[in-house]
Image 1 (tube, each protein chain N blue to C red):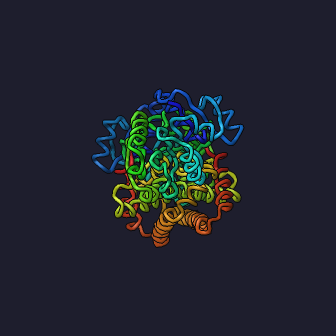
Image 2: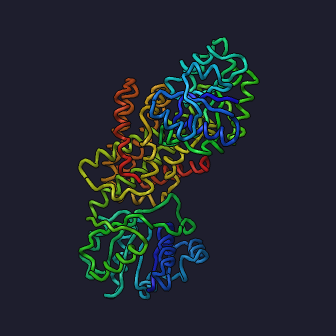
Image 3: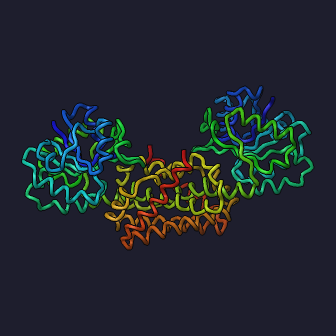
Length: 280
Length: 280
């Protein structure tokens, strides 16, 4: 199988390594706008050749879109315009509603499989690519009834080989859930970093004390704007819903603290502790 | 050296293991209110004997207070009332202002060394004790000018042996800084867990998607109310200051998102990225 990966950053690059490690591909072609990233990707073995988009789509059996989410819907249409009925196109984006709507009436809709493997880190670019990245993480298939059966099976087989349990959802449900379990974590982390940086202007050596707890809650604040501005804007209404609820919860805790309400704080923390059952 | 550890949970228990691993103590006595924890601590080798507080203070060269922060000031006074001028008392609490004020006029103030090693996890109780816990973490000494020179040197030597660089601060400065780099992370994590749990009432399988980013921002929400209610209440004004600023930052991000302000979001994220330089 020959694979084209469009965007050889954190996600596309890690997917390239995973395909190679599981011997799922014979050759990887890559599309990269940045010359620096293209050179890095070749050096790191994330692709065998860098090609133009049209060139790669003509050659590849599997076409993988792994660019920022605002660019995916148009790339999906452009890829579908060029594929035959044996090629398969997938995207790895963390927003699905707009994409699935845009391609819904395309004559070759069946060749597209919309997937979202639930993995990422706060780093970006080809250097951020990791071996074994997706293993053990769920992969979400959106609107899979609209994919041709052979195309869907090909993609299911790939993710089964990578060790990713499959979850099936409609795109709206997917976007709502990712707002809760991924996007809001980034917003709070950015805000926490900004809070502390604001204070640091007055208090120079505040960070002699930064321990492990701080590091883990603020880690995602290192994530890149190029990835996250489009995600937040494209998932705006879901993210705003969660964000309003989150601010509301912080205000409840604030009022309890202002009133020295030890009982209220205790019962809120006890309830928060139950998050345990859904973490590993 | 004979050591008494009052409270054999996460911090006291880990300190016991560290003292033993570095051969800094010949015998460890423990005080534990909970019978279950006492039995566990003995089984895990965190103490050689469980004793009553007065009994332990009479015997030990080093007395370590590692109980919830609201109990530390009175225990500190009770310990100081009973020690002679060769014994040393320390606490490991994450709030220092009240403690340092309470003991400030005590006739034996010099025998007390107020320290805070910057380490912790979201778990509690004797089972949460870890080997190598404090290594590489800063330890804060508060009001160390009020400690007798020999007492201070003893404690400095212990933490140097454990691999903890020493930082010296006054208690008010310490409490402000810990509000920013530790306490607020817990508040946001509790609030994030509550936000998501609130939504889960409607959306059952939201957590099929929970990935690594979510896990790291919500990890601290597993922390116990017994530890954290007293910390927040005792550091109320500092925590409220940070919390207000944090809510303010979230509201700024919310407004940018409502207005589709991509430029504003980008520059906020770029600024948040600079948190990098103070993390490892």
